[in-house]
Length: 288
Image 1: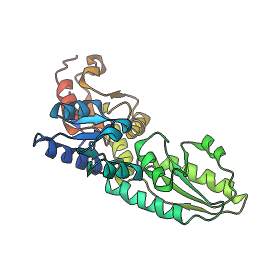
Image 2: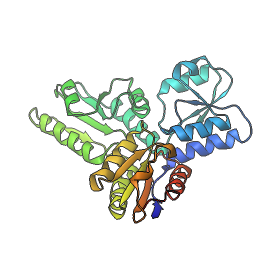
Image 3: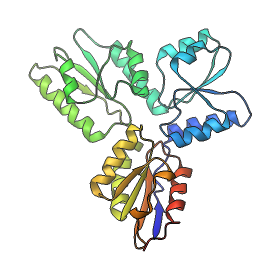
């Protein structure tokens, strides 16, 4: 059996940067809190918490004083920075540069809206990145996750459209076209910002090729990772013999045979060490 780990899978720059900052501080035995889950991967969270990282909620954050808190790659709304200043909290800001740039664009676009114009963000309202973006415009942005949500709009003005950086480009294009179609009936304009991360967008094509090249694909990711769900669907679309796992314990020996070529891959929130661990475990299976 041949087992290959996809060299293009694993942490994106933003996630890797945040984790590196956390590890650097924790290596000095300093107390460090993280506002929200650092990354959508339980295995990596456990590893970091074993190093001393303390994951906290927004409510817990508001009660802290005189300490260090790391902000993850997803970014935070302005309110978080105000609370930190009031409570003398030192922020280790690990907001992804791409997200930070998008925050600035959203804020600038919102300030330039005219009467009846709307700012729309394509994504999941509960996702931390969306929360950080909506905060740039006093939470007055209209968040849509699918075409059904477009019924929230009355299309009586022009629309400035943005997307969560980890969304599927194809779906973003579909939602954009649907908005454009509805706007044309009222002669209003649609200003689309291509805000999807290029790293995320390029991985779909790369993973499709990787999935085609292997008999069996083991997609490793946290179950609550939006990026993970999207990339897994891309893999299974081209290779039905694709399995989604979050830990080595979920592997089953009867998935494999000695003649198989097995590919191990993951999302932008999957640590390289976990994919290697999965590959090592698969190699121990001795199926005829």
